[in-house]
Length: 388
Ligand SMILES: *Cc1c(COP(=O)(O)O)cnc(C)c1O
Image (cartoon, rainbow, N blue to C red; front, side, top):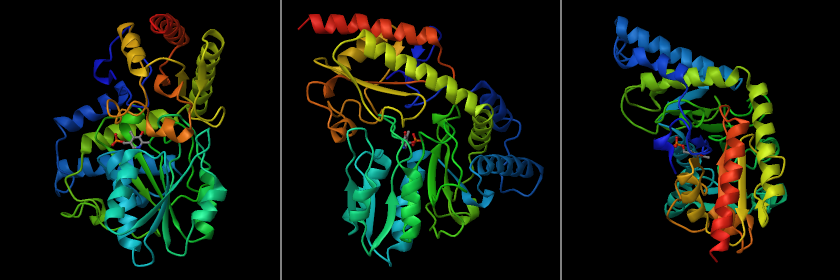
């Protein structure tokens, strides 16, 4: 709720909504905003500089996924990558079938692309999730049909942090010759993902979720997958995504990837330790609370809890007055609904569901910040619960 107001002294626990850009990423971008302003498509010096910078970012990103540079397509972010993946497969493979399988807890970029396709005559099966937010492979097996062309299931959920069984879904999709897309916007650059290990055909990612700039991301497309162009125009991105490249954005994303992947294992260990510390403290020191999402199989920085008998929105406002930035769930839902569709899909009881708070850590989060957040939670819950 306060990503525009990041300042010192504020405990920022909303890293699933967006992250603070790394200073190194900003420094890497700077030359490409002013001095090195060339258009990557021009043949002379300036253009070559931009071209080389884009090629370097593409190689860094490909290497981070054990993929090939030819499999990385730059986009304006996660939403565009999701739209392209879902609608692109529907368009290119529609002649083989018009059935798509996804889950009820996808990001709106996937869900609304599916809704759009339903209007175009495609059929979509929305897989349920269990109380931990996991899809079931059994249900997936039952859902699959002769005319299924795509399975789109996210890697890690943005609200409750559950990591889906991507390895098994990928194997299943491959065995049934169905394409598999995963929205990895919350997982990429947070946990290791190797395209040699996972049978993923398409993967979406977004730079501002891992300390890169906003408005840039990419879609990984396995080389053998046929994808139509998403933006028609010039020949940028091998003719698939026209438009003058966002050179500073791509450079900033490349730098953020480099930073995320050096010391990744140490950062994950530290973040998980702090996350578990936060969860344990809340569970021990506060009554009437439940943890949402999978207890262990969850993104390293995600904590999502529901407090009984309180309104989450009021709690968030009080927390913010105490300098704690948290959120009720996905930034895209705020204001629209009292209980998010993800919390609804998990079947969180009515007594708890409206009192849901998501706190998402980053590599910058400290133990002192966690302590402050828990103190603020305790005080404000006391206030809200006493008023009743
Ligand atoms: C943030 C997010 C998106 C959208 O990415 P943008 O770059 O903000 O468009 C898509 N999916 C998930 C899971 C996200 O968390």
